[in-house]
Image 1 (cartoon, chains in turn red, yellow, green, cyan):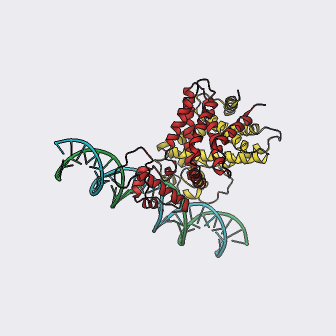
Image 2 (cartoon, chains in turn red, brown, orange, blue):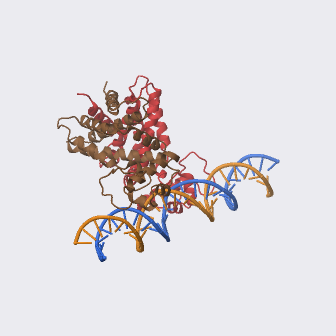
Image 3 (cartoon, protein in one colour):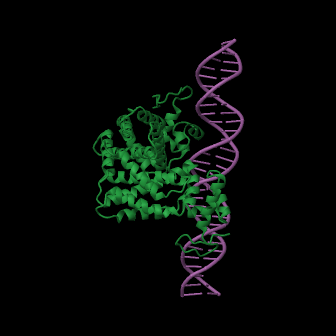
Length: 199
Length: 199
DNA sequence: AGCGTTGATGACAGCAACTGACATCACAGG
DNA sequence: CCTGTGATGTCAGTTGCTGTCATCAACGCT
């Protein structure tokens, strides 16, 4: 019944293991069962066998439960952009990172779907999602600047890449048939290029 | 001392006029003086000569004070896109709307600057700003769809337009010299087109 | 085995954002 | 002058979130 998989690299020693994971699981379940706003932090803690106070030691706020681990995504994104060939065009470097990320997500589609359903049902969670994406965009822009890309090109390339990711991701989780995220990204990027083409 | 300008088209009849405007002014002052988080709704209401409860009758929450009137922006944006020539490319229709909006902002640069300073200093306010921009993007995408643009092109064009606006706006308020917003938008749009160009 | 250290957790008090319910007041129209 | 209407005031309550201090389980050390 209890979660035995160690998800994080921290040392989990005392009491029942993986308090953070239990809290995340409990929160997710409750958000699905009765909605985000109708769920109280006390209820989450209770289901996880912990205290409300402990919840806030692991997650900055009630929304953050759904966004834990985004830092790794950002690092992976940034490092892929950073390690692109020197002669790669900015948007191509970003596109490479998009595809690297896409393969990571491919195996977790069911999880992504339920998660996104919860987020799409609550404006507060959408706000949090948007600022996470904006943080990603900023990090990418900074990386592009390190590669010698000037402003505003760096920021615009980063934002364009995030837009492609965002639109493609929504289509991926919403799709009836099981098309691969990478493919949807490729096609979305092509659509962006078409739409911004001169003449 | 009291605000006499009627800012909204509602009928302001009883007590001191323009309660909503007084609340907005008081909130803005306090956010600048001591920061957003350090300001309490009770303090805002007190400065405006009203009650905390009344504040929440005019603004859904503490953040919304800084975003009142965004609906008009959205309508103006959407209608400009909708009324673009039938043969105009999607991104050109959006660009036309961007320039229409730009001229509206031009006269209110000082206000925009202090407002943006407050927003940039607080993550919660940035979240709200981002979801407002996302709402704009959705509305534009819907309008483009009405004009016969397919998905994902419609959403991507809308997001690209919003990205241009966002980046250009930040540069406009941050600029030492007083360059026109419309000009910065033109140049940002050109940069986006360059960056997304094939080959 | 005993003991102190360490880090996670519990217990408790408190603030501030936000909401619902009901009373009250000022004005408009009759 | 009277009455309805809409904006405001009053009050109680819930919940998210924080600071502070006590407590507990494991680990290392002797």
